[in-house]
Amino acid sequence: MSTGMLKPPISKQDLARAVAGPSVGGSSDFDLNPDVAASLPPGRRLRPAAVLCPVIERPSGLQVILTRRSHRLRHHSGQVAFPGGKVDRGDASPLDAALRESEEEIGLSRDQVDILGAIDGHETVTGFTITPFVGLVAPDFTPVPEAGEVDEVFEAPLDFLMAPENHRKGWRSWRGSRRYFYEMPWGRHYIWGATARILKGLSLRFAALPAE
Image (cartoon, rainbow, N blue to C red):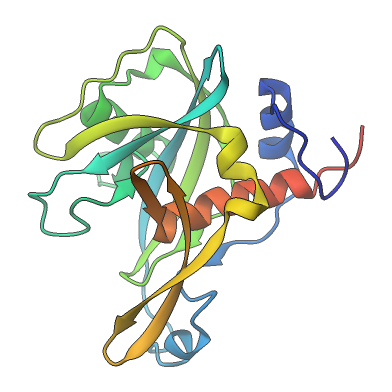
């Protein structure tokens, strides 16, 4: 794999190198909306959250396990997301929170995932700072979605999600202005917002790897 270029299929070894590789800097919902960032109060307090980017090996290649949030939820209903959530008082660490939420949301027990490490964090417009962890999931894992939180668990090819040509910029009208974000439509699934930006951040780590 050469610097700045991804050559599919991505292997588990490639993924481990990217996760262990150099930081490419954190990201935020404001990367494409500097005017919003400028209007934020100085010193605003961010709440810690964590997500798991679960990767599973299939005959067709590595797949990322994603969820579609329940349509009954008050916030971000129906959106595509990683399993995860805010860090609670009882969590020993952000990783502990990501693993706890993954077990609750999709039935992924801790002994079924090998954590490769954390990648660069992401700040959300809703006031969270998210630590994403990447892990390799046991191939015999069968998801059990939590009915109150998750409508669907699905897989998307890592090769597709890491390809820069699939990282599109979309926008929506919000309070009379355009608000921009990254989007990665996959089949009937619309991956966008923080989830898409975290995936883009992982792809930038691949691009930063030195040639072997």
